[in-house]
Structure formats: structure tokens, C-alpha cells
Image (cartoon, rainbow, N blue to C red):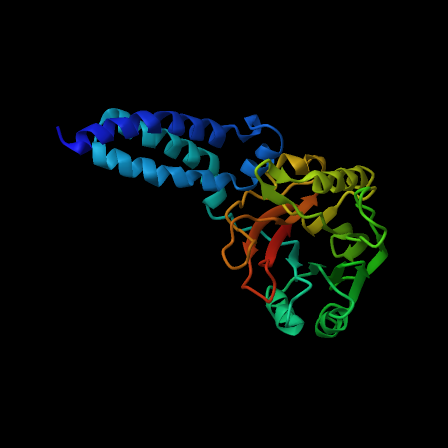
Length: 309
């Protein structure tokens, strides 16, 4: 008996439970508990990497069991993510918003600004604005975006007048008073008053215990509380939320706002994007489309969202 005749069936027997597990997690990631669940939800599409291996095994063995082992997770992946890769339907744009974590180590703010304004936005939300870099951003953006507010390390630039700009407290209890990563302002647009939020939630770190996301989740709860109390009907939130919108840790925010299915417009890390952790979320607008912009001097890619009423 050839070695391949022995190894093949053994691999198939091992692959069956793997395929079943992958299928269940693809279809129901919420079943994965705790911080492991947040990790799975953040990188949900990448579970499909098991499928090419199963397809290769099926092509090698050419048995019904091997074929079913590959097709089960493949069909599930297609059902879950097909709507995320279909082209968006063209609709009239009410506002264009750009979101970008510019990085506090960005060596060329002026070049970054050129990339952002090429999208012709109405609103630009930025994170990791340092005092040293602020003059460069302000100078480059002022000619086309005369209205702006900087609160801590986050900022909004707008074509339209702003009022009521103030810091937004989303600071976890363990962080010091110098941690300021939120703002709220009101933009006076052709579509009426719009509450603008720019936020940068705490970072998360993957590890053997899943995602270390306690501080991020605490900040998300505070942000959700602020959104629940927001008096204006129209809201646009721009921010680095340090997770995807599939992550259960953002449920306090996503219970008040929504976005478009565009999982594959990954924004981080810029060198090899794996997830979109930069978000544009809205209330009383629809996010018609989200796209990434060319790489800047940041470790994030900018994203641009087209919003419709």
C-alpha cells in the first residue's frame, strides 16, 4: 500500500472536525466566548484561509467526504461575506467624510493632507494630532476647511461652520486626566445641524487570552452613553475604534449608530491591512459606500465615506 493511500484518509478524518468548527464559527462567531470572541470577530473574514487547504485536500483525494469538507465552510463564507464584496449602488451623496488616524510619528503632515483633500470631503476627522504637528495640519487644511476644533489628540476640520465644540469624556477610569481622545461639535450643513463625534478608543492587544480589550470596552460604554443622550437627530461619528464593527465590544456604540457592509476595506496596518478598525458611523444618514485612500505617513490607511440622507 502506498504511503499516500494511508495519509490521505487520515488527513480527511482530521479535516472533518476542523471544517465543521470553521463553519460554525464563520456562521456564529458570537458563540465564541469572552475576549476570544472579540479576536475572532475582529479578524472574522480571515477564517476563510482554511478553505484553500481543504480544497487542496479535496482535489488530492477526490472523494465525496473530502469535497463536502471543503464546500461546507466555502458556502458558509460566501453566504456571510457576499454582501460585503458586492459593489455599492450609486446614490446621491449628502456629505463626504474622511477618517484618518494620522499617527503621532507621521513624518509628512502636508503630504497626508493632500491625500485626504483629494477625496473632496466635507468633514475630516483626525486622531493622534500632536501639539508639534498641529500647526502643519492647520496650515495645510485651512484654505479649504476654514472651520475646525482640536480637543486633546483628536480633531475635526469642516467645510461648514462648527459650533458647540467641546471635549467628550470617554476616558476609562484607570487612565489619567491627560488622556483626551474625544470631541463633540455641531456642523451647520446644507442638510441641517449634524452632531459630529471624533473619537479614538484605547488600543487592544492580542494574546493567548484573546484580545486585551477591557479599556477599549470601558471607553465604548462611555461613548454609547453619550450617544444615547445626543439630542440631535443627525449624527456622524469618525474614529479609530481599534476594532471592526463586528466586535461585540462595540455593541454600546453600534446600538445607536450604523455603517455599511464593507468588511474588506481594511485600514490597518497600512503595510498589510488585515481589518478596518477606522470607522464612519451615522444616525439618520446612510453610509452608501466606504473606500480606503492611498497610504500616507501613518500606520493606518485613511477611509472615505459617502453619506446619504
